[in-house]
Length: 220
Image (cartoon, rainbow, N blue to C red; front, side, top):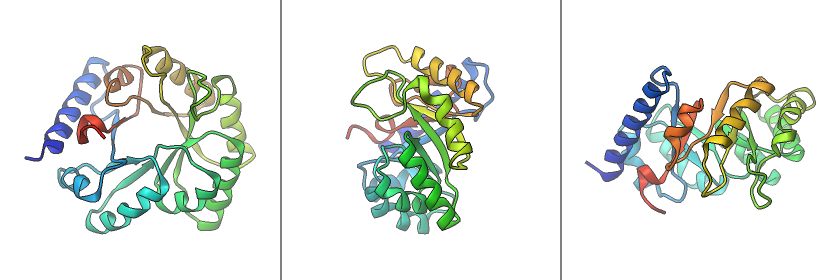
């Protein structure tokens, strides 16, 4: 068995255990396998093992490998989890099923335009910079609820979730708790939070999807 498949099964086992521990139903947290920087040949065994939800950071990189993989494997759901530049909105709407990194007015406007033009409606999440880190993408926590409202009312975007990347080397728990609180205030149901090092904690705080890359595919 491929090492990545063994590791995929182990991650799934840990997710199921974390759901049980948190008294949440089985399947409450969807595994998004983060395949950024890995070639199609490295992803194929994980697809063959039944994984269908994947995360990519860059529009251009995803364009290079996923159209062909989609012809081989049915039912793939592709998430954009890296920062989106407004000039890539057209390609992102065409390729991705979920865009998790809506974080400013310009992106909201461009996505609204492309969704109307293409007649394709990817699910949308707002990225929140829970640590208020200047170098990191995401809207400030104090602006998040109002931004979700503007996305809905001004741009007619159906925002269904929030996403965060906690500050490195900090306890992720307070970040996840903050995101869950903001989601309740904004009236959104989905929470994309938790990565290879902290996805079990994220599940305890209510994550509906966890983004796991290195624990499946190995170090980049």
